[in-house]
Length: 423
Image (tube, rainbow, N blue to C red; front, side, top):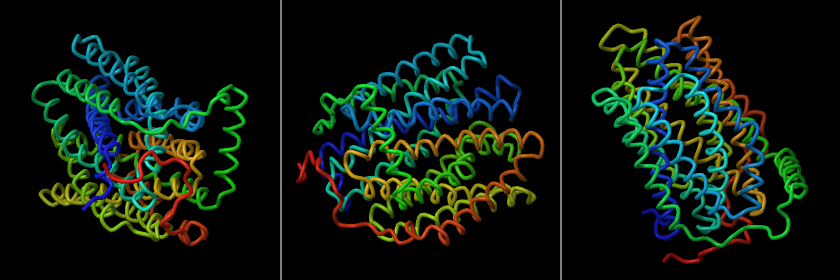
């Protein structure tokens, strides 16, 4: 059914990504709960903690893309996995010993953001080197499916463990997953893309400028970056800020309820990612803005339904978050597919890094959403954010002609192929 899984190196990168996704989603449940516990349910502090993660992304994001194009991507992945493991151990010890303080979380989030910003360009830039061009979209969707499956297992598991065993046990399981991801990454073998003799600061600075110019002047890539800005700012802040606030303060379903809610988004997302991997849509330039409209509509309806009396005011929001998850994963998989198919091999890392700059806006949106929610309430601000996504998606599909005309091709310009047939 999924031809990409016949390639051995893709199998290992899929396993590595699965473990990595577990740590992300378990942390996405555990850290907000930890912050709310320490700060007596402060929405403003929760938003501020999320915003701190923006700093390394903004400062290092473009350089992470240059590094992915200049140095061996497998080595970069291994180093980021080691850093992730060490950070997991540190926060585990702090929480287990009872010495965790709010400033520890701020520092930890900055360091975790720094490792994450180098991980993504290197990982996704490897996909066209592992898979033939006609399987790139499927590969991206399958990697997204790991995020979605772990949104179910990781989020639900983290919520239940935090509720019944405590947060220290949650961070312990996260550490085990980090070890698994590191071991799987060592099994990936692709042809090195390292540029001999051009890794000096001047050469990398020139490469950074070249990547920026290419991304700006390529109208398809520029269109993806613009619409991603809307998506990450107003659509993805739900996962890090609004979901915990709704679970704890609006729906009043507690820690394990947050895990269930995120798991339901994962269920919808998993189905969507597998459908994309199966059908491999070609008119991505039309589908991409449509997913942003769908995200906004789902978020607005989710928040509106929470005003209803119980049980409808609980059942309907939990049902609607599945559509939120389906829309979110569709956008991530399809946007990455457009980017890697629109950029030459030696430019992919930098192009993917620029979309990580848009991802930084997720933290900005989370910070703004948290602060506004503290004043006006999470329900009304979530509706505003959702309607902004709807408007942004409609404007994008009408005004970004080059993106609208984009179609997938059977060939992507690439000089690097580590494999040409399944193993």
